[in-house]
Amino acid sequence: MEAGKATFKTEGKWNDWHWQWRKRIKTPAELIRVTHAPATEAASWVKVASQYPISVTPYFLSLASLDNLHDPILRQFTPDIKELDPTSGPPDPLLEENHMPVPGLIRRYRDRCLILTTSLCAVYCRHCNRKRRWQQRNHLETKEYFSTILGYIARDSSLREVILSGGDPLTLPDGAIEFLLKNLRAISHVEVIRIGTRVPVVMPMRITSNLCNLLKKYRPLWLNTQFNHPREITHLSAEACDRLVSSGIPVSNQSVLLKGINDDFPTLQSLFTGLERISVRPYYLFQCDPVRGTTHFRVAVERGRELMKQLWASTSGLCLPRYVADLPETPGKVSLEGEGFDKEEKNG
Image 1 (tube, rainbow, N blue to C red):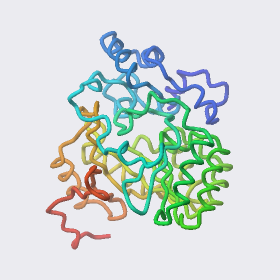
Image 2: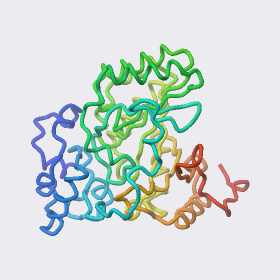
Image 3: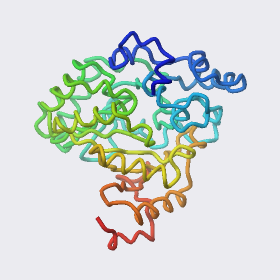
Image 4: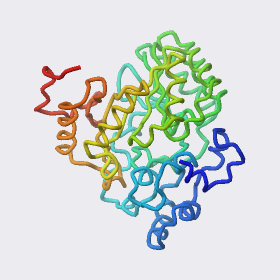
């Protein structure tokens, strides 16, 4: 990490999340400068970024080996010309846009819904299933927008669970987060609130004591994050997760199985045991969604099943996520574990 920090003039503000947010690398030229990418890559990055923008925090950049374009951290945020392949899948594979009764609210299930709180993220992950929305700016963050969504939820008593997503809801200021949580808690039939965020992984200094004190006022509240590689488990990300857990906010992890990043047994075992060590529950291992521009990340389901078999045979049950896929035509996640998982004989 120290080598990565040397790329920036930190002015003693490395642990200030506002500084990390302001100093995000957002242009191909900046990314080319810090990674020393060859000219052949540089030209393609400019082309890809015109459709799918770049965003990466100094912190997350510091976890990468900048002289290796195949580095598993680096590949999560660097553009790839394969993203522009129009035959690689639909832009909205889960048909989310078809399930919006009001703008910004996705309802694929009877008893829960998801709020698109913002289009912004601290890091734009190139495998994201909502990368179609990256070109949108901050226009989502208005009280009128949120009031329409909250009104819809208040009128439907079958909605017991609300998920805050985006973009990344924890990139919003504390006041906006509290506005949402306070108004959701005022709706009597909303029993549980979930937050989906990659902030503990890519900008852990955002998980401040003030934010944790805010969140714990609105429990029961659950937080799902996404660690994809064991090198993402650092003392800063561990401290961020510990602050959340110590505030009564359970933290679960939803990894994505990604080719060349975590599609091997040693990496997954190290990731899941490392998460257990920092009190983060390995919840799901997702098959990469077939969203346009992600073919180069997709792993064959049979390979995923073989990896899960290896994990079942040698890893504690507390460390094992469920291997699942999200499909547009099915209610809920679909298990991909298949045959051969002798769970009755699993120890621990």
